[in-house]
Amino acid sequence: MQHFGLKDDAENIDKNCAYGRSTIASDSVQVVIKAQNLNGMADKFNDIKEGKYASNVTEPLGRPMSRNYNWPKTIAENR
Image (tube, rainbow, N blue to C red; front, side):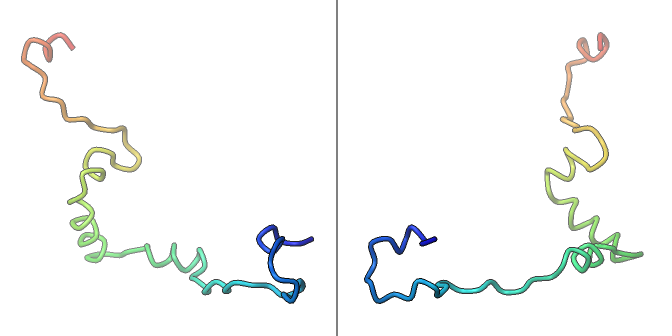
């Protein structure tokens, strides 16, 4: 089977040769997950750093989204 990009190319191109660049090897999933396991003070420092993001405040993992509405007093009493 011929690659569609080589359809109208020159006849002297080797059809059995692969073109392009190979990808660089990356870390496996196990290494990445283990790197996220923080203990003690490192966990606290990470929480402080993550706390600056609005999505961390309004959409915390494992809890429903908090929109932090400021309802008028009359509506808040009827809720």
